[in-house]
Image 1 (cartoon, rainbow, N blue to C red):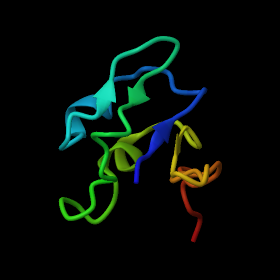
Image 2: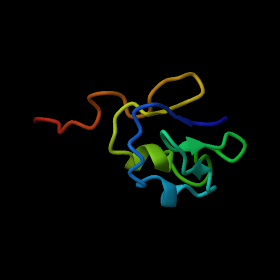
Image 3: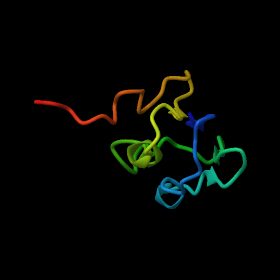
Length: 79
């Protein structure tokens, strides 16, 4: 069970300090998640912390390739 950061990540550093397992690695062209260290924050938090803070839609995906914050999800909701 592991998340992945894909192309589109802008290396903004928002996720790096939030990972409880220190699984996020500073890399180029974009940050990476060490699969062996990532637990998807299960048992530590209700949601993966990297995806909760990520300001870029669609760059953090689960093991099936599904974006945790898909395009449009960060847009303000109009009542």
